[in-house]
Structure formats: structure tokens, C-alpha cells
Amino acid sequence: MSSKAAHPNTESAAVVRRPHLLAQAGEVVCALPLSAVRQVVKALPVHRLPGAAEQLSGLAEFAGEPLPVLDLARLVGAAPGANPVYPVTVICWAGGEDAHELVGLAADAALEVVALDPASVVSVEGGLTAGEARVGERVVRVLDLVALADESAGGGR
Amino acid sequence: MSAAARSGVPPAAALAAAAGGWVVMEQDGRLWGVSGTAIEGLRRRGPEAESELRLTVSGGELAADRVLAVVPDLRVVPAPATLRRFWSEAATGLAVYLGRPLLVIDAAHPPRVLLAEDE
Image (cartoon, rainbow over all chains, first blue to last red; front, side):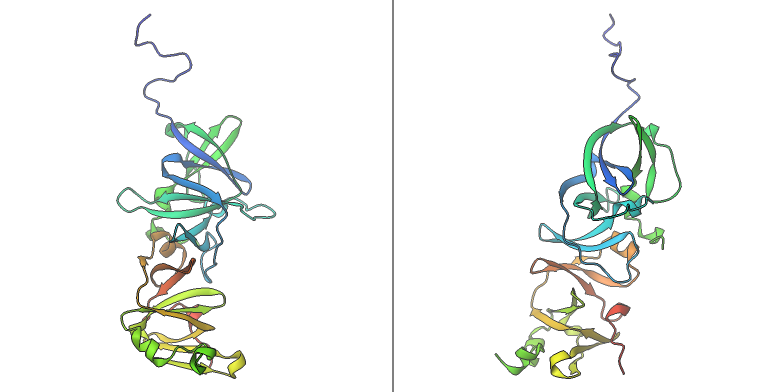
């Protein structure tokens, strides 16, 4: 057997799967690039900002630093569910490599880590998503963390 | 405790000491910060038991339930892009005071929610 033969359980060398954290947000499951996730913590106390867009839950304190906390369900254009209490906050990096910042994402649960092929992500309209991808039996929405910190895009109000 | 301290109004000396420092105030349960050098005036409005404070800055008169502190140093980080994207008001930056986040305002363009509505 040639040493170049692909293992039957692996895909071709051209496919680079990237680990993503799946998080429940209202009625949808979101995928967050694991490289951008710093920590998942019990919901941080959030101080709401009057006049903020619905995507911005408010401000919190994390590790001694101020932190904007965003509503993950709202970000991906999902219904927040009947009783959105968001028991966890996912701390992650938003923005590009040259200008990134920490944000908190209020979510219902952190579910699991899966490998996603970026090529399998299909563009969809609505929300700050890079698109949708199929993971097993379910369709997940991939949050675009780079676009999230693009203030020129406006708040979508 | 001085009368000024009991009433929640920092003594003038404390405000003067804030030159180059920061005034931390609370309004509707939220914390806000403003540069001490931006404060042009301070007065109380209404009966003492239920009065509010009025802080005059270049952008208008701010309403505050109370002044929590006048601090010489506050580690202010620039307002992050996500905040600027989803909050339309001007903000100088963010900080933390006693474990609570606060928004440092631009005294020339204070958020509408802080502007006093009386008079």
C-alpha cells in the first residue's frame, strides 16, 4: 500500500476541518471558532445600557476588565426562545487579527466541540453569520466573529 | 461625616482634587465616569431626601442619583468596536470600579439618557 493513500476515515488533504464550539442560543445552535473562544463561564451579571441595540445585552466585568456582552441569539437572527435567561457567557475574541477585542456572548448552553469544514458553510441572509453548516443531523449557524467588531456595519436597528 | 458627604455631594475640595482624575457617578443603577476636569458645576436639585445631583459639563447638564467616588486613577480602555457598533452614543471608554463596569462618557457629547430633563 502506498504511504500516500488516505485513511478511509479521513478526508482528502484539501479539506481542513476547524474545531468549533457549539452553543445553544434560543432556538438555534451556533458554531464559534474554537480558536476565538477564551472561556465559558456562568452567566456574568450584565448591566444594561439604555438605548443600546437589542444585540447588546450590556456591560459586565470579567477578570477585572470591562466587557461588552452580546445576545448570541439576536446576533444570529434567531428567536430568543420563550424564557431567555442565558445561564452561560462565552468569552471570545471578536474582530480581525489586527484589531481584536474580548466580548461576552450570552447563551443557553455550551454543547460540544465539533470539526467544521469551512467549505461546507453555506451563506445565509440575516444575522451576523458566516453561514450555516450541517453537523450530523442538525444545521448550525456559524457566527462571524470578525464582522461582529465591524462598527461601520451599524447596529442593525 | 460632613454634611456634604451625607448628602452625597462630594466636597468641593474633593472635586478639585479630581483635576486629571475621574468622577464616578450612579444613575438608575448604572455607573458612569466623567473626567474630573470636565465638571464645570455641581448642584443638588429637589428636597434633600429625594434629590438628584446635577453635574454641568460642556455638553449639558447630567443627572445623577449620587456620586460614588472621585478617583485619581481609573484604568480606562477605549470603547470597543462592538460597543460602538451596537450603542449609538459617544463613549470615551470603559472601566471597572469596585467590580462593576462603567462607561466613561465624552463630556462634550454625553449620552441622552444622562441629560437632565428638568428646567
